[in-house]
Image 1: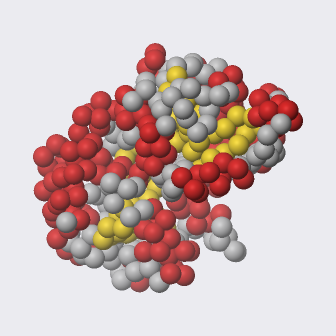
Image 2 (image 1 turned 45 degrees about the vertical axis):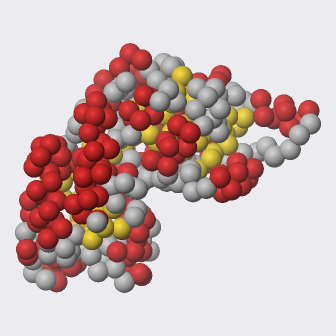
Image 3 (image 1 turned 120 degrees about the horizontal axis):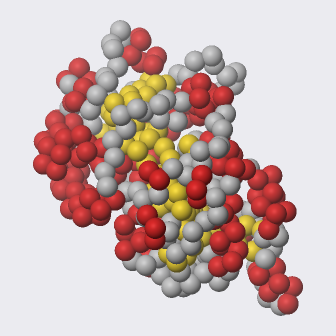
Length: 360
């Protein structure tokens, strides 16, 4: 749930390495260890089971060092700035809202991952160029606090248009589209729903209806949203939040005791389809290790680990979803989408226009 905080933090994480078994240093031993280490640059929401990475090492001989670089947009921006001399070998977490920024700036070296034939063509947005490999998919949607609406004897909204209805005034919190991947996804969902011009009129209505804008997902979901465990502790008073269709299973998994029903629900008519990719960074110091890591990311072991680690859906058609995910997650049959080319053509102008309309 998705950009680098600062150079000092990146350097610190680079030395510490969340999953590395090698140490920063010099000498023949360090050089040999470096040759068997592959570095994955990613966003702060990346997570994977330790036994899965151990399986990668067993099968390939490579250890993985993970460099977390903030939100997805920040990770992509850092990759663009360090083009040709990257911080790592593979970048994971660039999604379809940011894809053009990365590929147009030549961040990635082409590589066709082994096992790509198990991934439906609808997720392979880079076509035959293979600069990126699809890894997972998720839907950005408005979530709602079930208890709030039950207590108020108020039906929750259903559609984008409902969110601008005065009976839901001052209830929605969303993220700044200039600093947040889900915030941008929600904006793109409204552009897909209302068209190039109509989305602006829609956001004027949302602003008049008291929508609250915060910088990122963590603040929106875990502080402002009254339905999350974090939001309850923080005194959040917004029962509607832009999050993910997979957020309800999170609330069940980490509750003690686990409830029979998720405390939050999903407005499935407000969703935008997000696809996350990984790619071999141009200029990678360990391209062979990077290629093996890309193969592994779409392999069944990693794909089936994804749902309960990062609460996204695998793209490989032979990967099974866990019961918790299927029982409490939501299916967005009408998730909106936009072609990457259209996003690339309009993104900067839309963000600038949205900022003028909603924030300033």
